Length: 435
Image (cartoon, rainbow, N blue to C red; front, side, top):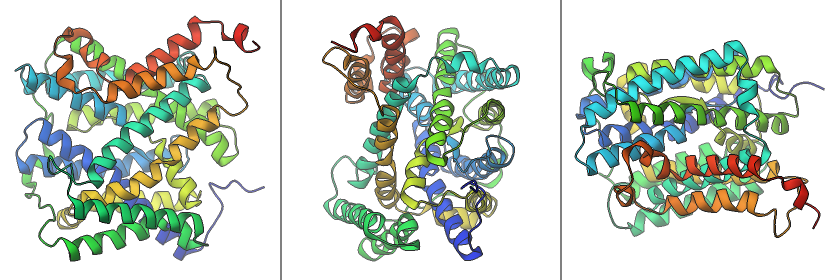
């Protein structure tokens, strides 16, 4: 039986599927450098430069993983865990009157150091011991919480809350209509119509938004020479307590790699070899080094790729590489990149909301075959519901927590994963499986 990753499809289908990958990559990435730039109060030209650098290197990272790393069609992009932690740290620093430049310098040091550690784990094979910390129930917790966190962000964007403090009814109705359209195409569509549901949703939504809300498109300042800037978050600095938090975040972010490659076994119906793990970690570690130098949120394989792949049902690698190459062009051709950057946030968030719903299925698949009693249900309920509870608490509420642990305690995804690990290994659940 031919490997679905290498199975050939027609050139037309490959190009169309590649364009769909392009939009998926774009919709996932575009908000991240913009939000980081605004959080660090960077000038418009610097924000545009960060966006273009993110486009270029995300395409490069995807090609590196698709050809040299794990060699699977799984997007390599700025990790949601890192994104959430960096935004939380920036909000906390601003609330407490700390220097954002000093925070940025320590983040750069921590990200670069994390990159070296990840490469070392991949080269030496020590990741096998770290991987033992991520059994199916921990991985399932990661899927549930990541899906909840990102869908929450996307839902706010769908309602127009990303650009204001109040719901914008017209934008919200259009977004909900797009969600229904993509769901209907995915469920009831046939052939390419179903496979290209996300691309169709973006095109229809973009056109509808321009017609219904003219003048609302976002405009960015030209990047100029800022695109070549190194260490744009600030000069390197050292805050030992914060550095420990950042490096620990880097190690926990490896849950992206473990969750993605474990999920690939089910989706692609093939084993993932130790060599694939090693190569994937080396590429991710290298990408983290680049991220620290150029002010990009660090990289990891996107488990959300499963939602995209399950929705489109195109598992081939060729369209993925085509999409990555096109994404590089967006960053290299400034007018083209700025045109795509005018994609309405609410439209991108609406189609991503549908794609990320599939993460719930990925989380459930990790629990397949398990039975829970009134005692053993705590092993999954406690970390997931604790993480969800932390999501709804504003970051300013943690100002009374010591700086050393604040960035960890206030992050629901990080705390959920840590609690899941503790619960799984501290309690002999086998004794309670048969009440």
